[in-house]
Amino acid sequence: MEAYVLDALAASVEQVVPGLGPLAGMLAGLAGELAGPGRAVMTLDAMEQLAAVRGRELLRAVLQYALDVQADAEVRLPEVTGADGVARTRAERGHGRAIVTTLGEVRVQRIAYRAGVKGVPALFPRDAVLNLPLREYSWQLQQLAVIFTRSGAYEQGQEFTEAATGVRIGKRQLQQITAEAAADAPGFYPALSREQQPGDPEPEQPEQPEQPEQPVMPLGLSADGKGVAMRPESRRRRAKSPDQRVRTFAKRRGTGEKGHKRMAETGCVFDVQAVPRTPGQVMAPRPGGGKKEAPQAVNRWYTVDIAAGRDHTISDIFDQAERRDPGRARPWIALVDGDIYQISLFQDQAAARGITITILVDFIHVLEYLWKAAWCFHAPRDPAMEDWVSAQALDILHGRAPEVITRIRQLAEDHPPAGTEHAKIIRKTLHYLDAKQPYLDYPAALAAGWPIATGVIEGACRHLVQDRMGITGARWSTSGAQAILWLRAIRASGDHDSYWNHHIQQEHQRNHLSRYQDHLGLAA
Image (cartoon, rainbow, N blue to C red; front, side):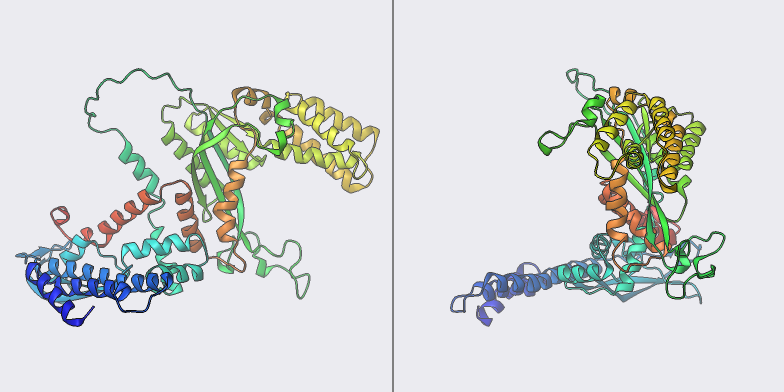
């Protein structure tokens, strides 16, 4: 498109809306460059790249135009009083601040209010109106960076952010942005619960036809841990740190000398779509290799904590469960892997809150112990081994765990295991089954349609923790790991958008409203 045509178009638009003429010229120039007659035909890829780069610049100019118009219209206030009680009566225009957005850098002009007293900082009410971040990056750009960094390495987040926006953010800055983004995670769900509490009476709704009563969905709770490789200063300290232990080997750490991991305690609360089953259905092979009909875990909520212990995580689980079932009208089920300390934590929390909860040991763990015992009583690769395990598992599912214990003990007496290792396996299997009998009420669970395996939490440990924290070569600080884990748990719970809005509101209060005496009027 010829230059004189662009100038004429810009002049025409300028007469209608002052300031928009150059933008109209930029848009027309871009369209002419992409499809103007007489030019060589561009490939789609080249057109898309040009449109993205030049289009981003055009939108940045539009955003800058809107900010400038608002700045020109900013009304001078007689005075602005800070939270320190000092009135700022001196107003100075022309104070600009650069903000990097997803479209590029813009400059925000605003009025500064000063008190003329040494040591009293200036205030910028327009910063509060626009809710400008303390960092030079806009909230949209920070959110995009967080989405990338919570899913992959910081180097990848840096690369993806630049590819999507043309803005390059340093790795250290990405780490800081991510840590700050997770700052409001601990108080998010309690605040969300308070917002959802009933307040004023709801307006009357027109009468609806009666709906059939829905069955009460059981409430599932589960917890487990996954190790995360940590930096030396972030490892848990017990009797002796790994660096203080006596080294057995000169070039390699031996048993008990590594200790480079810290457990990320993961918890999950979910609703159970019950599917009643029989023991035979549980042990039957999959039809055609397909998926068996089984209870489903829906509406999953996750929490992960690497800074605190298991007691804190299980307390969070119970808090969320009570928010979900405040009237305690639903059956509560805790699915555990058999760890005695974990079971005691569930029992303590339930007792302290006056909650009746059914604790079930993961049936897959029981099967593993049965297989270990089978190896002690059968020759290697003996097909009868599988039949023996299936028979014992069916008995346990029918509620006959004592008979299985007696049977294994009698087999061990009649056919003593060869070698000390097999004898040790038999002792551990018998001890496990005997100690877990109170939590093996599978007949009642199957009849009620409850799950009897901890697949939900096992999967959470993988996709919440391992997939991100286990990147090759990664070593984490406690604060850095916790920030990523909180953000991943909130995302997996389906609450990213709600959390980000909550985070922005909290930042508005901390960074701006808290600086003013009349912050409510300022917010309005």
